[in-house]
Image: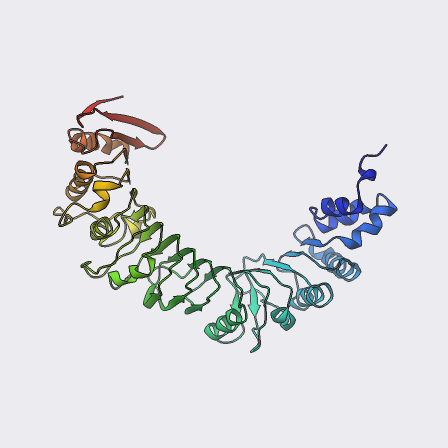
Length: 440
């Protein structure tokens, strides 16, 4: 007996919903029962990559027929992966059909084109007032003609990657976001766009500026007090950037390679438990009364100007810090690891975290410069609860690590010292007296 034939209609629909729509249509020709079910599939996936120019009309007609014949009460997922042969009028009609006739919940559109001057695809105005739309994912070569009235009450997840706007970019994006009162997760990739995000409901923000290095942009403002997770990557010279306090923040990664004017920028992050920072400060950090009470995990990029002062400040202002990682993430000629001053400015007194909570120090790209040695020595000899330090470098620098740190008297009696090079790991054990014993 055919086992598949014994399955319920609901289970068969769930199975078919995992297939590309063209495969669903082909599969359902196997039986009359399946032929009836194909019009009830709530998840539609279309990809034109296998259609040549001469038979592209076949793909277009197939999408129209399958959308118009679909009888599912709700389209849970509409996915369109389209190349340069797609026409704006067709894409607009497909999306409008899903919105108006099928109460669509998830729309994902990706336009594949290597030609930056290729035709832009416009989206229908009905999409901006869809009451059921929960996720909108738009990628490449799409033009958003945002109307003055936007109402997307169900939209929780919004992804905008390298899209264009029909009129003023700033006001268009602002209008779109203002019509999303329940937005939770925003992924935004743009090219030197001024961004103002005032979103009380937003919990997750990932924002990338794809503008070219050293180019000048306007800036950004983020005022979203419900944020739990924040990721910003931006290598553009900005006139301004401001982030308001985020009392619910748990994790943040901020990579801004040019001109953070002063340390007050950090005030917004004082509630975070985990921070990854690449911030070049154009003025020396000074005492400012900011305390990172919740911070336990800190990663600092050594490519940024003033990173050594940031180490001092964060050690002093993070009483519960457990983990510190220093690394040069970019590994690009424009962003080489910046020389630590020979006279690294130590904290005025041993920070509370070194006395009570600090457990792990990692340093990727350690070069053994004067300030490097001083900084590593200070942390190892003052951290009373330090369990492990891990230093990695180029093979030629491993002997330098051994020379600089082998004879240190660690403050913690349970300290283990590790050195690491690419594809190879060496271990340096520390005795209970805190002296290096031997390489193994």
